[in-house]
Image 1: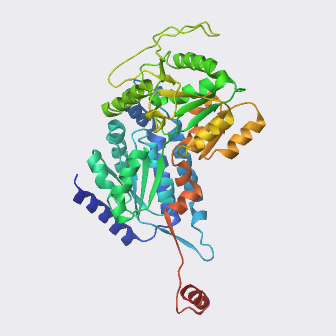
Image 2 (image 1 turned 90 degrees about the horizontal axis):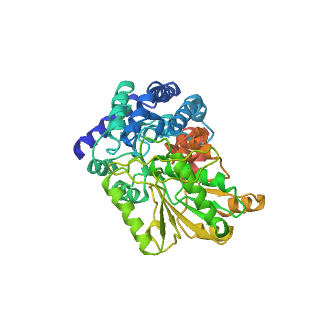
Length: 450
């Protein structure tokens, strides 16, 4: 597919949209309900495709709560869209036009469909660019979209990175991008010529802080559960951990035990998405080791101390682009791995003097998508929540909550931007209608023009 073909698709969608007129609440609700129905009726094969794309053999190894969260937001929009559309004095919300959505390979289904909660509620049509790095999911979703929607309502584009670059240059009314900061800069450059407004959902260096009085078992279980989900290739995972110096060693031991436990019955390590990303991670590890970091492989083939259950674990698996998890001790800001999102099964461990040391380090770095604090002192928790700028702050989350739909919804990148009435307004044009020869509006016209 070449650039001219893509421009023709967008132009055809826009002409059909103008010919049909502004959709009423019933049509918007119908579109939203059809997306929710697609997820309802096909979540199992979609989950199986996602598992296969990650190199896993079982559906249980994939992450389903993100689909639950997307479904919930779509259903809510369907219920409430009519009230969001109600005209208010002095303002009116109008559809923007054709919305482009660039979906990532990390959550190729939910992050392709979730932005439709806001886009469809606002009366737009949409075109989705699916990821070539989640081919099974993309093929299945493309087929399903064609069954539930006309091409004038919702279209799908597949292709490699060159197609993605052309996609970002198209004349969209609004563009949605989910992915890395590096890729976001490329998308922004491609869209700049048209001044296309872009909604970004970008990952980052999201820390977990373990205070001296933290429940170390709880903290270690949560951090390792989050970090090892999909081999750390999640925008909403823990990037690194900052641990109070006096509890660093027992935290590391607890992390080792829980990592082995997580993989005890795993069919395989999840695959790293491609060779380029695998080589990047290996380069970051080599740089960190050169600068003084200590690598601690969390190899489940090695026997670990007996746990309360009396079980000993041994579950190592390998394969193409598979990478066993590691802790990276004595990490610091001189290392490349601390300057960019890790996005892999490597957990840098930074020792800090106290909470204020951790807060200061966070403050001088890039804004984290989320920050997680483990500690018992109520005053310290409040201080952390007040001083750390992050989209989401969690205090002492339970390990099992990372797999829950509620937390998946809270942490899923972009969720707050395109869901609810906020999403409706984001994808709408807020406008005023002034009728110059209407005596009731003459004062308004004079005010606005004077």
